[in-house]
Image 1 (tube, rainbow, N blue to C red):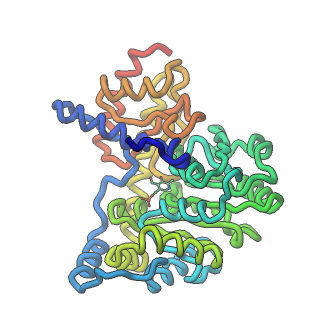
Image 2: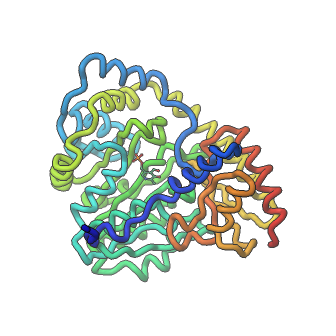
Length: 392
Ligand code: PLP
């Protein structure tokens, strides 16, 4: 019987969100009413004008292969959009389109990391970072985040860890799972280390548009010298509620884009043509619906943060972006995997333990507030009752 698997897949683990979702669905099948705050996706549908454009593209016959790096028209509008929002000059040849933002994390990492290279990434952080480092044969170097500083990098530890073996630094702001936004002053420190040690940067900015209190989140790419060593990753899943369409992109130096294009050619081939046509519509049409959704998320954020802080023993920062809160539940003295399990089994509230995002996530829970106000309200009531029964 064949049983030996390649080293590059041995350490891969599933995403915790899918496991909790499966358990929640099991309970639902038994007749339980579960409140879903685990999966990170918008609770509203793709805006109708975008969906209709995609449908029309199918009926028009836009159902054939297209260039591996994406439709030229889409690359052009993305270059304009990113350039304008970030205040930088981007050429369409620097844009590589893929089925989601994930290929924008995966393929550039494969293209720059040699086995044995060190890769710095945030912990707690999106699990794909660790997975792609493992697949590339790199050495994972997690940097803990600092709760008091909007869950930005703990810069003292970052400066101890970065060195001449560091090949790549992965950033995510606004962040999953914390909602934290890295301040420009921190990005400056990271940029100067990247120059000193000649590192690549992947800046995952998939939540860049979901920023609150009228803020614009800073990008490391707007700092001098960073464009030629950085990959900006973004996509349609979160901003336009298009998780299932599978559409994202990455912006990078042209020579790297050519390498990534080859990886795409030989793996996915190309991204669905009609999805990309819908993507052009999403960017070029009026952005009013995006603004409305951001206002709604902000309302939910304020409500869930206030509600969590009103529960004795919980301390919750007010995140500046994305649609997650990351409350500190250390005072209850239980492993968060246990708290999350009990919350689901006993209270019917599905949340993720911070440890699903790395070991420094111990002591925290992740709740996604891309759920209706009613669900949030009911979850807060159930959580308050649940935590009352736990010593702290
Ligand atoms: N990056 C982060 C930080 C995410 O949270 C996610 C999805 O949850 C992704 C990337 C992947 O998004 P996509 O659906 O575009 O592949």
